[in-house]
Length: 591
Image (cartoon, rainbow, N blue to C red; front, top):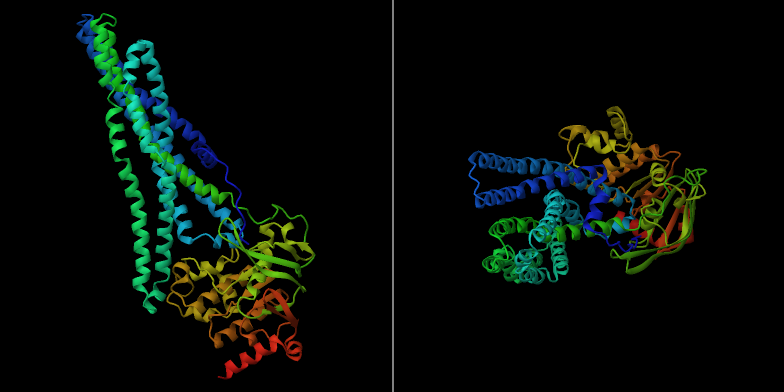
């Protein structure tokens, strides 16, 4: 079931950094300290130059003194470079650690979410957030934490110092700032809304691109290349147009802000000159203010350049936060009770699919399903497509939570079992199996951590997969490709079954697990699996009724309800839906 989100709490960029920085918080603080030293070393030469000018105006002609002071200026510039290098090195290390923490926590989060919640997230958008968006914050976070913080702090200190020297000249310096500030306000107007709109269009482009690439075979087969490509073109045009329009609206305010804001001398020179000629300000103070005015605005301008980056990082953290706030499966960290055995009991189970990440659309699929599956039994679910067979299996596999009613294992509600314990008890194989881009051996070994090569080969033999694996180019060391792309659908399923058998779980669920295999191999797999699951609680979902007619009990599912149940012979004797399905199946086989 797709769970509804909790409203993400409003959190500042600093709050997000603190949450994800982990053990590297100290490195960020240290990087800010060295950044302060770096900026201070950058500004200090202006003070030294002002001091030299004051000495010259006072008639000092000690050239050795000036050489020493010039040497101090050089040392300050060197200190600026060294401290900046140390600061950025530490902030980059902390940032890479932070981005890694975000991705690991998001991956952990996805494993704890109901399957429906994950399926409701377009894979293009999810991949875009976890890879490109998070990666795009690296430069911002590595520089913004030390440099933005240090430049803002020193800008404030310098402004205060200017007022200490002469408040009138300090006000004269600030006279042009309102113009630049107003221009900045126009530039930043609707910034968050515009950026969110741009993100939405970028996500739409990613989703369209992924859909286009994944569906290229169908697109070509049905001659839909033109219409499908047009959708991609429209998404690409909209994705670029939102940025172009945004930048076009900001050109003039940005030009005014960047030209006027640094020009403190525009107001300082005429006002200061007037005060000087009136005798209200001495030459030394006036010249000192001119020199310091040039330096005072630089840290502020550097900090201002990070404004857009801060907004973008905040928006990306907001997307990450929305995922992190999604409601997880209701499971305890530790088992509240231990199951007595591996029997399964469903009591009046109701379940609805919730569409959309907010779960605003609801459609009930199961309408009060109850069934009992004894330990060690072989149970099959059959019925028309869309009847709810796989939904029941997924609820038993704890991929969703029920809306009402309960699913019990050994007399214990699965909500009272930890996910770790539950995953140990259940092996689930669906018709859409995923293989990782590594060797056949390593894909099977995923079923049980620490399994030896001999264990892998033994379970392959018992699963009836050994011969076909050895026929591959490199046998067990054959790389299967992304999602198992180098193998056929049937081969992928057989490896997935071997992986599930390697897990050796007491409850095994096979959801159309042999759908892509040919009849000959299907018979081999069924015989092999029958030996491997002896004594285990087995649940099989199948459309080919002949493959499950030997089940201890069959449940016929129709429209989210149990239509009938019993053995193959009992159901045939009852007539009804199962008999019609069996006759249709036999006729199809005969044809």
